[in-house]
Image 1 (cartoon, rainbow, N blue to C red):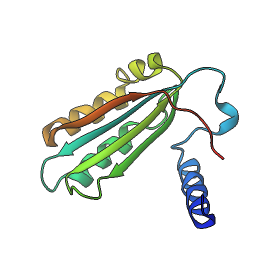
Image 2 (image 1 turned 60 degrees about the vertical axis):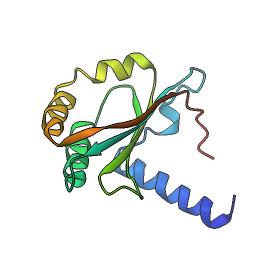
Image 3 (image 1 turned 180 degrees about the vertical axis):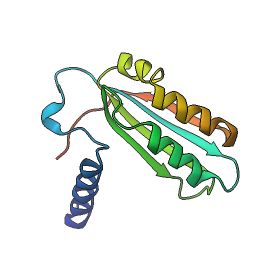
Length: 128
């Protein structure tokens, strides 16, 4: 890995930690398999930033969530990608009943145009 790329990744990880989007390494039980999701959401034309705002507001402080990263699709102005890392699948399921998550879903539903690819993963935590 190039030095510039390593510095960029380190800076990005630090920014996520500062924003509270990533759980610090010492709080992660690396002996247990993690649960992950990567999925694409498609917003109605021109509403992608609004959708991102709803998701950012409704997904903070979810118990068992280690990473919730929202990224704009570089090739589609109406799509976003969400990468999630959870302590386990049960934590993810439980998050769907949280009041803030339910409120985000209710606000986002009218501007959702659909979903694209969705995959479940087994994240391998290696921050180096």
